[in-house]
Length: 413
Image 1: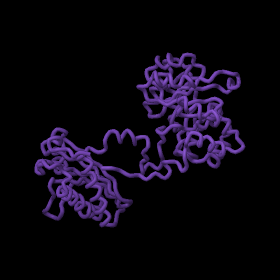
Image 2: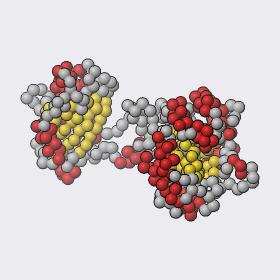
Image 3: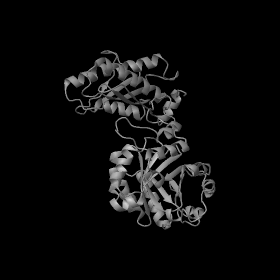
Image 4: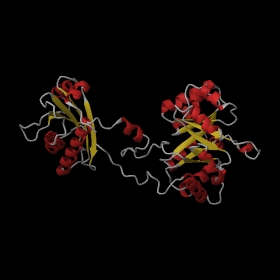
């Protein structure tokens, strides 16, 4: 990535960098701003140096007393400093680390060749855990984090392409749980259509193998028996799996989305037979809340016309043949999948197929454009649930161990 020139820095007014390095409790997290003394960064620098607050006193970075680096750098503590022991960590190893990193960055040519170091300033916001004790680690981690944040700021890291690629794959280290997204089709969706919550919990605890290509669906009969609160019960057993609430909403679209969202659903299902007004409210509310809007197209006669009448395309479309019509000789609607994808090629959505899915017809569904295969009784009523799931996972090309289970987190820049 190309380093930004001094001219570009002046035009942009402000460059932003961030880096996290090390291990608790000495973990270092540095956020920084680089900009002209005459711009917003310069104004913030002056205000920070002259406006003090208890526990968050800004200080100039110095290599040693009376020797600040160029560009001049202001350190702002993120964590409230409550005593002199904590203050010493800021005024000692952290202050030196930031100053040394800035000076070394200048010497190493990280800054553009045409930069005037007397015209720009840096503000570095520094995290020091109250329980940090090892001064050398505090220094090492904050030095590395500051250097990396500087490099990232000067190349405008991350590029937008990386943000869009990683946003649904990333797992935040402090969250404690993953927020699953459907970024890597095809998927196997298991419709939990039996009505015993105890049996379902036993199944997902002990019989369904772990895979990042699995989706769990709280089926309509299950929700009718236990209410949407059953979603939270499932979440307690599998906190990181993608869970769908198959509400088959026909009315009050916004209300039903909100009910499922409050119980931790990752996605909600509306019937395609609902009115356009209900569907629009349903899709809008789901997307507003950041969960997937799914529309089940079972018995919808003109799919393309129905979709064209909507304000927005849902995140997932289900081409569904109902249980009661599986053996009636009705033709498959899978041939419509490619037609729908071509008609709405400028939109981003996935297609699921449901109704009589078995390993032997899964390949055909995928070839016709399906991204998700929904399986109920073939798995949930199988004598060997684990074997049935693995059979489908193999058919859709899922490998074990799953990609995210042993994923090593690394960064560029």
